[in-house]
Image 1 (tube, rainbow, N blue to C red):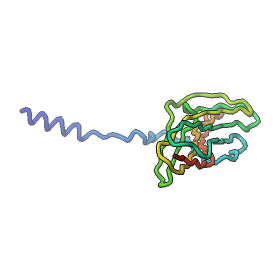
Image 2: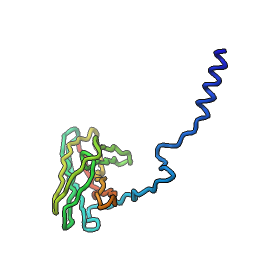
Image 3: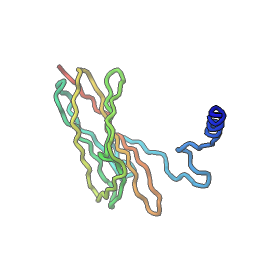
Image 4: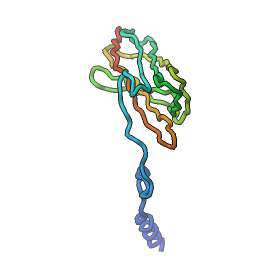
Length: 164
């Protein structure tokens, strides 16, 4: 009897249909546009990004990278970002990446004209070598009537040499 109940339960659970969580409902239109990518040049005269970092550092010495997101539009904009705004990708000469990610998402921020979000990030290299660093800001520009626009702005790559 226990075997019959087990087989019946197993059959019922195995026959349930489920949709993947990422699939949109059939009656909903997907309105989220594809992310836009750029380097340090302004994007559509709305935003610019920049990364400052030293060219040389000592191994095991803490240094600071500064990433900047600037509102270059002629008006105040409201964006939804993560916290921090930027995440960093650090790549060694072999192409191995060490991403530094964000810890929070969904932070609403108004940005006045010429407003700058400047973030400082401490880091240290444990082994000597040449590394490439880039900072990426992913955020949503809040539009009128739900016409939000997703941005993914990447800074120019910076080379940092870690010396003994």
